[in-house]
Length: 111
Length: 114
Image (cartoon, rainbow over all chains, first blue to last red; front, side):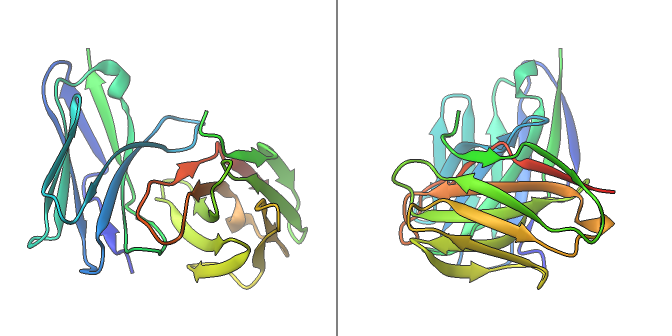
């Protein structure tokens, strides 16, 4: 049972434009959400997080939005850069528990 | 460098064999998580340990087992290996099991079963 879903396996965006990656979850107990970036042959690296008490968190070019009623979160990257090309995973957890990951979205930023 | 160390980086073994994957968490982290990533799949949670004790179990096969030692390093044991066990195995660690913090991942062990 996939509790965290990323329905777009891939996304291509022109350099300088906005990249929007989406994630849906089913478990209403989730209260902490994270995005990870993964390059080939490397482990996932933490990018940005958001707690359920917020609906937006921003860190430089990266902004995560959380819509609790829709059980949906999204990652916005503005402006997109070629170095952002990677696989992006969203993850969710409830306090003290495991992190559930989505299947990932492969982002390609075209120069 | 995440501070999480996994050894070995690569492992090739035959079906039916047993292997042990090792993970050293970041200094001070009490929780260790094991994940499996098969080809074109997401990260499948296997098991979590917190300060030496099993905290949560995911889709871990009975042929697989893990433990966390007093020095907080963890080992994942895979036995009676099958071709389908070929995957990337990641270990991650986080500060606590109680508070919401990010988990930091190692570079993974690529297991190939032939």
